[in-house]
Length: 106
Image 1 (cartoon, rainbow, N blue to C red):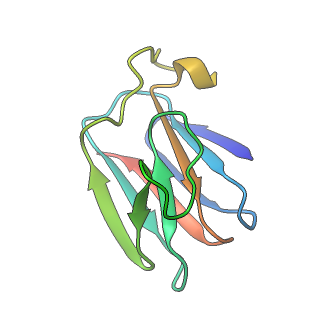
Image 2 (cartoon, rainbow, N blue to C red):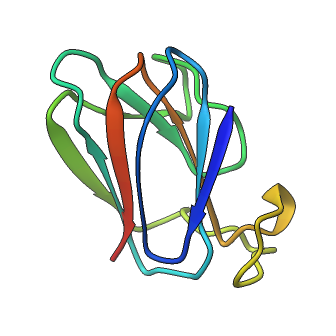
């Protein structure tokens, strides 16, 4: 599991089917998640729980597409600048199959 932090945007590639934490270190009104993989779905959660493919509570971003999320994306205990899971502003957990993705605050 990799944790990648930035205030505005994160662009990364998953290591097989290991969950990444894309940590946006400031609060945003919405988050856009882009799946750059052309074959595999990307699975996303915003509640500090690891995403599981096709599981309840997990959002899907189809191959070569993007989704904007606006509700339930912020950690109520978030502290701007934090890189600790409990106090990250937006801990976006991402699961796929080795593909690349982007997480951007909008």
